[in-house]
Length: 246
Image 1 (cartoon, rainbow, N blue to C red):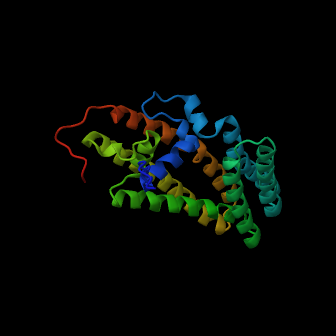
Image 2: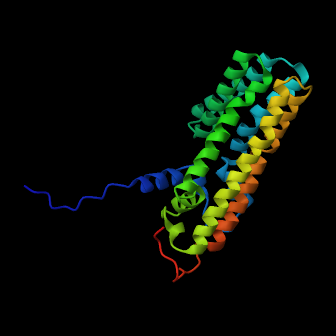
Image 3: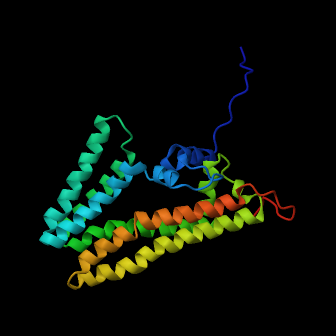
């Protein structure tokens, strides 16, 4: 017997990416809505997620500044991150953010312990930022600016940003904004790392403090601006002079 029922089409790669974005913390954002502090905080995992992302860095800064002991300064934040993950698992919560933080803290601690240098605790962060810069650049070279894809994924229309000139321009500009933000982290912090590696007094502490300032606060500001930019053109009527082809 032949099954005449119409089969559901296989989801495309864009559909899968969009579904992943909507199921993440960013999925709580509505690009067409007015930005709010509560929504941005929710995208970071709420007060708890913010606390879990900031505390390891703060602990490293305080402990290294007071003890100059690499072992204590990297192991205490690592133990705290393990505690965050364990507590979320016990509560049957969503440990994704805590796991992500644990991986980063764990790799950073391992590198610093292997070399015995406190400044090497930041090498993993530099690597992640460099990868992000490459991803952003590749998305632009491929004429698929990353912010446009993310905004489209949040609205279940991965390529909606390509339907008119204004939307494409905003997708490009917002992606450039993130490229500048992440590139600035590297441009400022890598020389500070090199100064610490050269033995400049207080350079490790200065680098740790700079990383905190240029971390979550800067990302929240960039996310706010990006949201305002995307929202400004999301519901504009299609431009008759433009086409969806690139």
